[in-house]
Amino acid sequence: MSIPHDDDIQLELLKLFNKAFSGTMHCNDIYDELAKLFPELTEDELNEPYENSASKWANRVQFARLHCVQADYIYGARDEHAQGWGYWTITEEGRKHVRAIFGQ
Image (cartoon, rainbow, N blue to C red; front, side):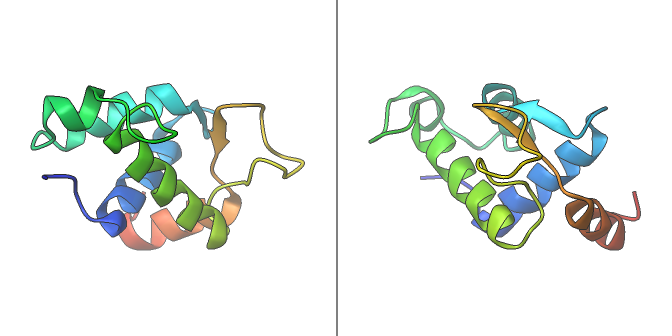
């Protein structure tokens, strides 16, 4: 298995959101864009269905997102700022965190 550590996925996820025009992206686009940053992922990890997720990779990204929601870096699905089913949005706290780490 070559799926990266949760912390690495979280950082790249926040960086990706911060670059997005509105700070919002659909989860399917996120899975694809993040996968490009981790070329060590196998075809099975990217494509084979896994439990309730599209793939092992999607499952790991969903857990990274959950940890970002718990840290108040990404809006939760029930938050008033949520953009709809499958759309994830960075919070202002998340943007501050990215700037502090990456200077972006």
